[in-house]
Each structure stands twice: as structure tokens, then as C-alpha cells.
Length: 131
Image (cartoon, rainbow, N blue to C red; front, side, top):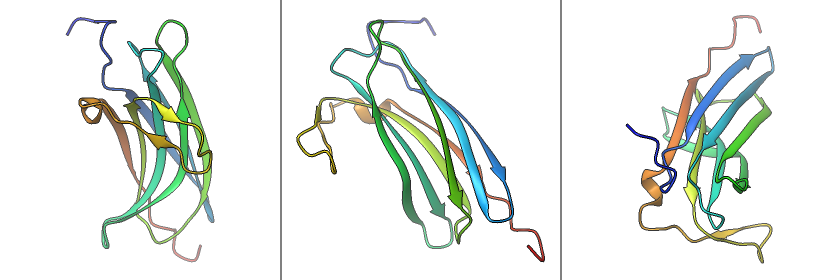
């Protein structure tokens, strides 16, 4: 596939999960190119339980592109172990952000924005016996 700077591409997502007795550390990076100055990258880290299919958000950020239309956003968070078995790091190209509501930003999604999403799903290892 040719690199076309005139259109956004699916974000590239890389992630790693480090485990300790009582906590998990998620590190990763979300990258994208070809974004316009009005576009933003929605980054999310969620915990997910396959048994109940429940998702809980751990981290959300909106990152704008540099002057060349690139986003290169590192992510590093620590989460307590819990009753979930997956951690999901995702990046999605979204449109304009209404910053008037800082606690709950409103996002205008373009028609094609949902296809511009990338994610990494990590399986949380079981807690060691006696731990």
C-alpha cells in the first residue's frame, strides 16, 4: 500500500503489559500520519472482562497532530489488578473537539472516522497462586 499523506490512515498501536503482584503497567505508543490540523487522536486504555463483556475506561486523552500531520503519542499508566482479563489500548482519528466541556469533551465524528481506529489487546495473566 502506498503512503498517501492526503488521507488519514489507521493508527499504528504498539503496547506491552508488565505485571507485578498488585498492579499492572501498560506502556505503548499510538502513531498516525496524514491528519489535518482539525483532526485529533483519541487515545484510550480500557480494562475488559470477557466473562461479563464489561469495559471500564482507565485513561483517555486527545492528541493533536504536529505541523506535518503526524501523531506520535506515548502512553504509560499503572493500574491495580482487578477482576478483568484484558487491557485494550486504542487510538482513533476523530474530528473537531468541543473544548468548552473540559470534563466531558464532545467529539464530532466524521463519516469515515470509525474505520481509522487501531488497537492492541493484551491478555492479563492470572495472579500467581499465593500472590
